[in-house]
Length: 168
Image (cartoon, rainbow, N blue to C red; front, side):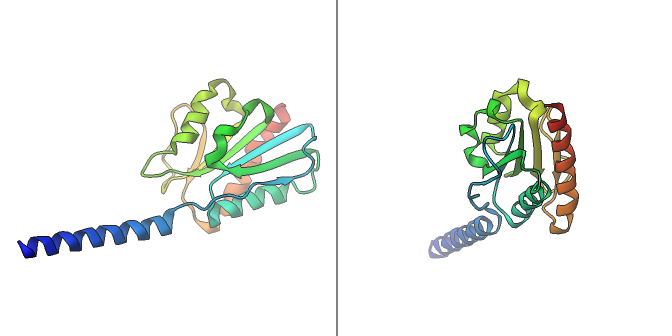
């Protein structure tokens, strides 16, 4: 009986250690909101992102590209606060997130499904561990969080964003 209790305690410690390591390694940081240009600009773009080295660098690359175009207002928020967003306020919304446990975050799926007639203004980049995951009927850029690929993904998002902004 003592051996069983000892093994059970050891398994609990191993599981708790693994869980702590996993959360520390893969948990997203909180994104601190920021703005670029005048909020009274005619064109408005929202970037909702989760925090990580990869995602932060991607957001910086997008903002750097539009730095000189002061006719476009950018606001960056944490993706978990997306539910507070009034979609009609924005000409385009870029969502940068990670899938968690092989599923997209519920709040992002809810935001998308709550606005089925507005998906044409959404750009979604999801880091999913592979490039073959997608949301049904939604155009999603997906791939791994590989730092060397940031310029590639930045270019993809900028291209799609320019397409949306030329329509508005």
